[in-house]
Image (cartoon, rainbow, N blue to C red):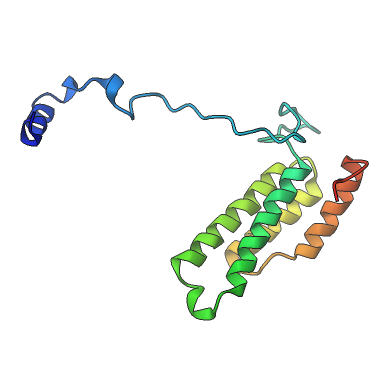
Amino acid sequence: MTDAEKTDAATADPGANNAADSPTSAPLTPTLKKPCPNCPPLVVPRRGYTPARPSCVACVEKHLGAAYVLLAEINDMPDDRRAEPTSLSRRIRAIGHLFEAEDESQEWPELHNAIRNARRTYQIVGKIPDWEALAAVMKAIITNVSPSPVG
């Protein structure tokens, strides 16, 4: 069948295409990522609320680290390159990692609020988060959550 015949066939009877053959017809099913070995298995209600996902201090640390690296890369760029799409991409990904850290820290309100405030301040004002302040809150949580934190 020529391209013209295919076009004519598609426009003549749009329902003639087999829906099973269409890549968009299948229902989208999310695939599970490799679970974090430190994350709790289920999201359970805590102190009168149910967090969106299990809180995991190791995952919070991972996302804060990723945001730190992305923002450090932007800071290390020459001024004339900071407005390019590359740095915008880094900014957006850094904000995403800060949000993920915020979302994963719901069990610890002090940390959750500190990360949320840091993310919102960065988004609105452009001020880089105070990594030392976040690290101090993280250290207190790691000490209480795990008797022997990984160094």
